[in-house]
Amino acid sequence: MKRGRTPFPPRKRGASPFHASLALAAMLAACAALAGCGGDADDATLRELRRGNGSEPDSIDPQLARMEAAMTILRDCYEGLVSMDRSGAPVAGVAEGWTVSDDGRRYAFRLRADARWRSSGTRRQRVM
Image 1 (cartoon, helix red, strand yellow):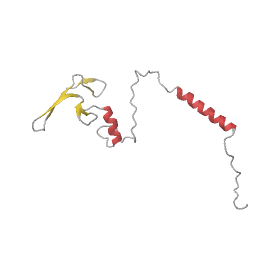
Image 2 (image 1 turned 90 degrees about the vertical axis):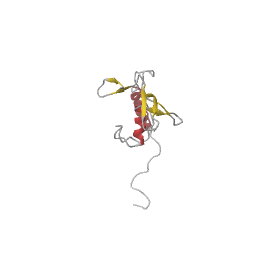
Image 3 (image 1 turned 180 degrees about the vertical axis):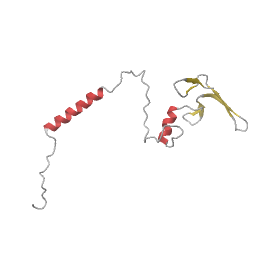
Image 4 (image 1 turned 30 degrees about the horizontal axis):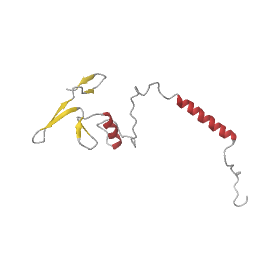
């Protein structure tokens, strides 16, 4: 064998017509399969939250979650007594209002009349 030569024949550049038609057929089959993945629900009844979250959360259990990715999901799923507005000021969440004692150690929250939570099972209970 001479120096600088390989035992393999040189590779042709570009795709053959057979390979191009095979790739086109595969793409058309994939498009046809994906067309059936949509739902029958119209936009008015669709309730889905799509959120760019970055990394995968470590847990979505509120007691076990530690990563920011998990906290972002949990903030979207749960409503606290108080939330924050765009400027960072506290605004009512589940509570419709609150009072703070003179010494700043006791907070009394007035809950919304329509406040509800999901307990164990499927039963819905009124917040007491």
